Image (cartoon, rainbow, N blue to C red; front, side, top):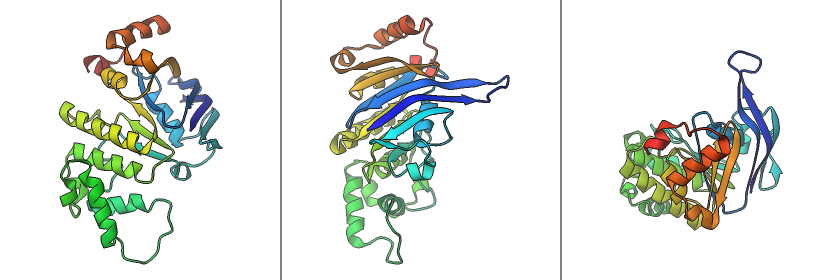
Length: 264
């Protein structure tokens, strides 16, 4: 469902600030894979997400989604294949619009626009049922402005919007990092349920090693723009944080450098 072939990306090339963010990156996700991604500071995690999303052109390599080469597609065209939730709860929604209006925008993604009524009664009832499943009380606040929601409520709504049209690939870019532990756990619970119910192919970047182990069927660790560990199945289920740190040291020859991950 997703394949990265020998992807390279360098920032500030031929200057004193040159940084090779992706270094011949190769990754393949089968349909329904839920892959968690962890790595130290500057490992290339977010750069990989941006490469998939088409935020900027690659230096070399290819990005394929469901067998289609999207490498040269602009980000707004590539968006037809993708759903993405960012770290910042303020992204992914329109703060000055109502909850139902935000859902309507997501629902109409890729459809032709006309001059009919914006939201019909039947559609509104569908939104209410979808929100009810989140168990956050949002089903009774359809006319509330999204900017009035808490960070956790907003991330849950963004997640719902990103998956409303069942994307080929769902990208979760540290989507719980800005939330308190209790709220983060709730959003992860909602994420697991939506991914499982819709059989979504998912790539989730996290700074929390425990979350990376507990969630998904596969775990990859990045370092210097490459994948240095790829663990799945029974081996992943038996992992501990200490195991991950040890394996990182063995493979990379250095200590894991990410304060947030270690503190988590």
